[in-house]
Image (tube, rainbow, N blue to C red):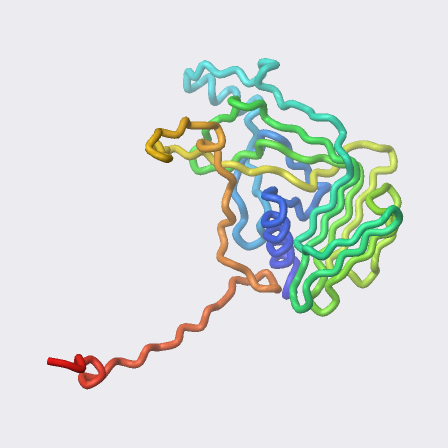
Length: 258
């Protein structure tokens, strides 16, 4: 891996492919439901420009004479129950037992590993999302009190965590870009995952089996696609070699009959 910026983009890209959610490379940096902004093309991280629940945003809505009050209870973020601990990996080769999690990635391939201790989901209520011009909106987050993430190198693509997903982890010290975070007081201060959406302003009704398909909120709010091309193991854009085509001669272009 050439640098930490490319590493973060590679990790985020792999986790997104495995879970359809965006990973927070620096989990102590809070990402909140309602945050909006754009994705940094180099690092893959979200550059937060504001939050729809902030007073400044509500003032902006009022100044535009929009009859929207996001302070109403029905518009406020919903908080889900504490979930089971979860493991997300870009590898299909994941073995787990009561006291150990061992993850081996395909030989020669870089892998990503994210374990979250008893996460909790926070989300914008369905039907309450706000259209933002050219911005991406965080519609839900997974917050946690403990997590571990790693981006092993292709040469040593593996990770062992003792204690499964718990508050006390032991990990392979050779794992690259390894980070562990635990709040011993039990506070949910880390945001390892979030869902990022953008409004689909030009919706065209689709025809399915001769019948018009009903428009749903998922149609209007598709997942945010990454603003980069396919990446290599270093998190850099894959450079495809163009093979020049030799010009065909007049003889080659002649039909075998005339």
